[in-house]
Length: 248
Image (tube, rainbow, N blue to C red; front, side, top):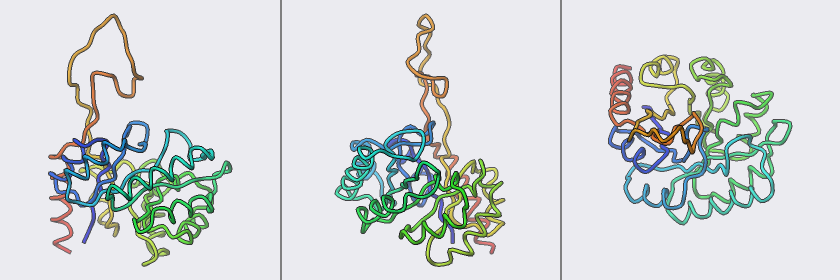
């Protein structure tokens, strides 16, 4: 009836997501900068601990989605490792400097990933001419598209997401993601969306630090904290979704 995919930034977050009842994991690291490819150790241990499908983010660095040849080859190598380790899918995509789809290299990633599924990530949300871009993503052979409807939050881009669901039909599955939480997810469900993406995470302080103002990190995530998925948040979200869809 529905799928809740959790963006998990560590083995601990992935375990918490599964405990909460999530249907699928998008595994990454550095979620506070939009996510990057997790370490091989993180992938291996997550797959060892979980029974639900794990899709791995293939993003070599934060920032834009325009990649050099070295970065592109790094992405291909990461995909090969994901296949060997037993992931169910990968998440990625490449743009040109003008913001349009780098169709040739994205297609190479998709071919390299087979038989794993391929999700085109939220790079779509900054692409011009979204309907044309959507057609090209389908032509490349992507199985999923993760999108906020080209808005900061999926709830604000819901009209475009619904339009894409209609256009895509059975050719591609739309996943709504961006600013989704247990408080607003039913607003999207009531609009006919059935695939959801959220982190359900919180910033947790593990210890206090006060060493002459010394800091190794930015203000985005101080070094005495971690960002981790909360199992109870995922469980309460799943309960809301189940109650809503069971009534339909």
